[in-house]
Image 1 (cartoon, rainbow, N blue to C red):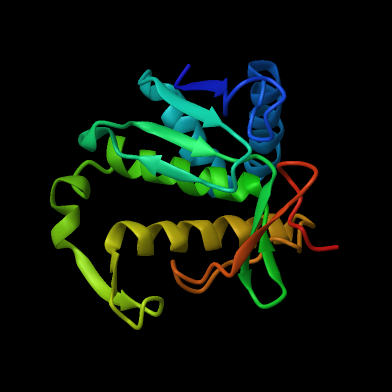
Image 2: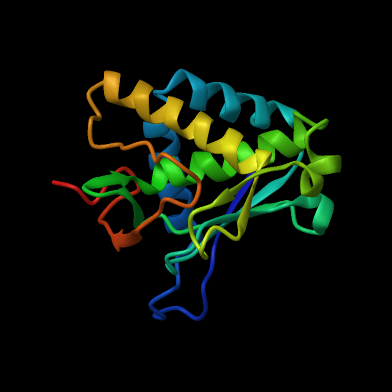
Length: 185
């Protein structure tokens, strides 16, 4: 199995703590939901077949990221109960956040030509920080993938999933009750 799902976040009872069993159940729910998108299913299935261990740290801390293996990481950090506000009135579920991070692993392990030169492949300046934040091709490509997933889920009746227009266009987050909730009624 490619994904080694673990809970964590401090001692039991801490607000950030997720048990190992709870982490695995959140992950299962997220994958069951998001892989209804053919694009997401392709990425997930491809990573599963690699045989490379990709740890998924599940913690309640409003934070999601992929730590690149080439930089000493090779793991996903995911909050299964934090939805992202990506446009005015638009939200993404934690499940879409997770497949976003999985796509980074897909880029690194499957699209290997992208990663060796990633720092040199900056293609635009982001709107946050007064236009001084560089946006890598990695992030632009991931947002394009994420938008495709949201569109496919929308066609299946999950209209609350909203694609963001740029990598930096995350307005905040909100705690939700499940990995498939967008925070929008």
